[in-house]
Length: 237
Image 1 (cartoon, rainbow, N blue to C red):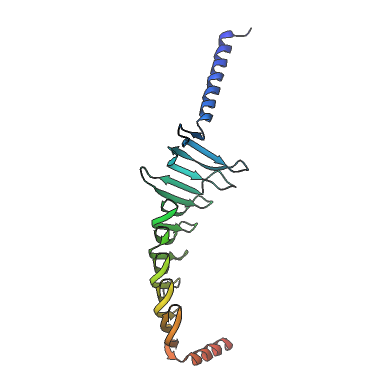
Image 2: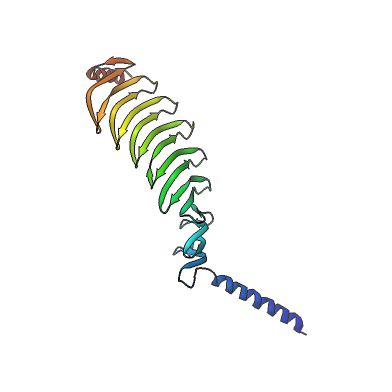
């Protein structure tokens, strides 16, 4: 014999659960009375993989948004945290292994302030400073294995402007060039991997000018003699 009370209880529970599920589903991807996005939003790729999820209020993003690539919806490639009463956004990029790839602030769609990037082993790759989406300030790049500086340059308005130094992975300076508006301007010096001077001279708008000095094993030589001695070294190897 069917227990009427039990059947009624089960039916009521199912209807209640179904109603809650419908209400929750209705709260996704909604617009308010002013036709602005509100509440939780989720968008999907054509292959049904999750594209992004986040919340809106009065048509603006609020809180944390997570973005996924078309192949994998398990872990986000990008996480954006929208700041309260501000257009600034804290953006973090991730590798497929879930390790941090890069992090910094954006104002609208432009990078601002200090950004840090990392290798997939967690070591720092670069330090960059932006102003209105363009490199502006000191730019640093590091070697993956040693963590030593590979490059230290100065930028203004997205162009090299000031001193730029390149280092070997053992920390030896191998290049020092002065830039202006993205082109070499002024003195430049080049060194071998032992730190011995190779070339020295000046640039003007990216073109070598005046007298350049050439060195071999740290000794001053003519350009022709240097080429001959380098050729002999190669032939004798």
